Length: 222
Image 1 (cartoon, rainbow, N blue to C red):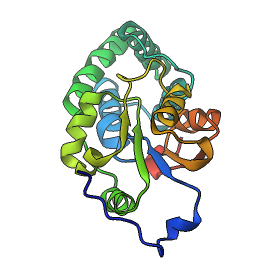
Image 2 (spheres, rainbow, N blue to C red):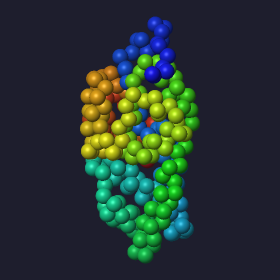
Image 3 (cartoon, one colour):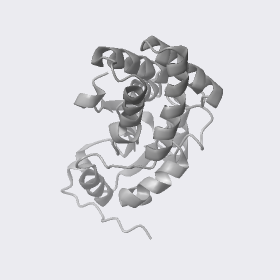
Image 4 (cartoon, rainbow, N blue to C red):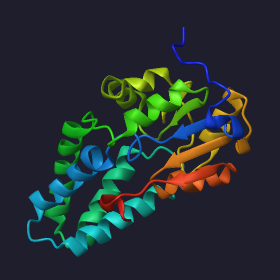
């Protein structure tokens, strides 16, 4: 049985048409920097210690730009090729670029289950879950990661719907995940609010006609 509280007539939600909120995971519910950003930067510094901040920022921007163009789950070979090209753009030799790929994979495997909740997010989720909002998670990450995240952010277990890259054919910025969520939950786009941090989140939700909030922080200035 769902332990949520029943909303009272005095609830501020009564005057809103918003019935559901769709959250992204990395960068919204949990720290993108800790789980994904730091492993990348650490790998770069290990392979090319003399690299400049400007070179790192330029390469990072290209990574985020790539994320806005993908709508299929990338194959491992494609990711390896992209990582090699990224290393070259940061001034690495072929040997360094190859070492960068290997180091990045090792660092990522070590940190991919390092879930650090965004400051204040659990309190926000608790407040929303106490009302009668439908709470949805739509993420490009895997269900395995979300299962692990529910140990650190237990409120995830109370979400009405969770859609990961394992549950949809096309990932964000494709809008099919949003349309699937609307269909399953029997909601209209005008009744939903989406919260994301990457351009891919914003592009996908706008394609679906959903009102969108972009979360930004200093480390995610791109």
